[in-house]
Every structure is written in structure tokens, then in C-alpha cells.
Length: 92
Image 1 (tube, helix red, strand yellow):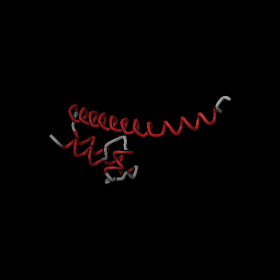
Image 2 (tube, rainbow, N blue to C red):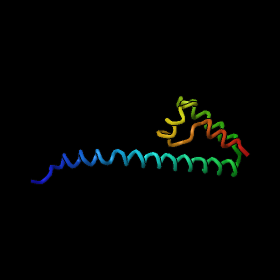
Image 3 (cartoon, one colour):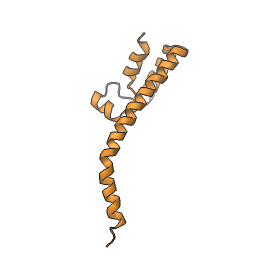
Image 4 (cartoon, one colour):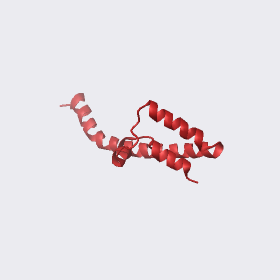
């Protein structure tokens, strides 16, 4: 007998879930890395203070969590936290 499509779909979902978590972690890491590069480009091209002001306004308007748990931020955030970005922008 031929396995049902629905059974195959369920099996695929069960097998893909752990892979999806790992690729999600990798994608979040790369996204944060690229965000730091973009911030550095903005700082080197113009200056950091207007970007810091804009980031603060965005965080305030979207009610961002300023101090998420580091493990939660690592697992779920595709961008660095506001404090991480400001710290990066202010370093020489």
C-alpha cells in the first residue's frame, strides 16, 4: 500500500522542526552581525548620534524590552538590543 500524503506531511513536520530551529539560530546570528555592520557604516559615513536618537525613538514607540534575558535575545531576536547597538555605536 502507498503511504498517505497526510502521514508524510506529519513526518516531514516532525523531522523539519529541529532543523528549522537550528537554521533560525543561524539566520538570527547573521542578521545581528549584518545589523552591526550597517550601524558601523552609518557611524563611519556620518556620525553615531543621529542613529542613536532614531533607535531610541523607535524603541520607545514600539515599547521594546530594553533588557531582555541574553538567552532569549540570542534565540529569538534578529536584531541586537537597543543597549547593545548604542554600546557598539559609542565605542571608538
